[in-house]
Length: 154
Image (cartoon, rainbow, N blue to C red):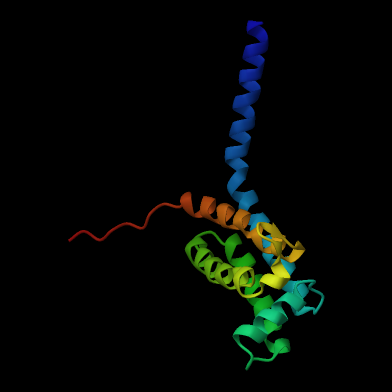
C-alpha cells in the first residue's frame, strides 16, 4: 500500500511539474489560435459570426460599412492573437483583449432576440459569446504570472 502511495505521489509531482512548465505557453497558444483563426475567418468573409456582427453594427455604428468593419475587426482579432505570443507584450495584449471583449459581449444586452432563447437559456450565438469567460480567465492567468513593474524610488 505504501508503494502505491509513493508511486501516486511521484506521478502527481511529475504531472503538476509538467503542468506548471507548460500552462503559460499553452495558454498563449490557445488565445493565439482562437483569436487568429476567428479573425482570419472574418477577413476571409467566412465567419459564421458575421450575421451577428452585422446586427450589432447596425444597432451601434450604422454609419460604418459592414465590409470595412468586419475586415478591421478580423485584423484586430488576429493582432490580439499575435501579441499574446510575444513575451513582454502581455499587458498590451490584455488591454486589447478587454476592449475586444467589451464589444463582443454587447449582443447579450443589445440583441437579446438573437442571443437568448429565454431567461438563462442562451442560443448558440449566446453560448458563443458566453464562452469568452474562459478566454478572460486564461488571459488573467497569463497576466497574473508577470513580474510587476518596478516603482521608481523617490
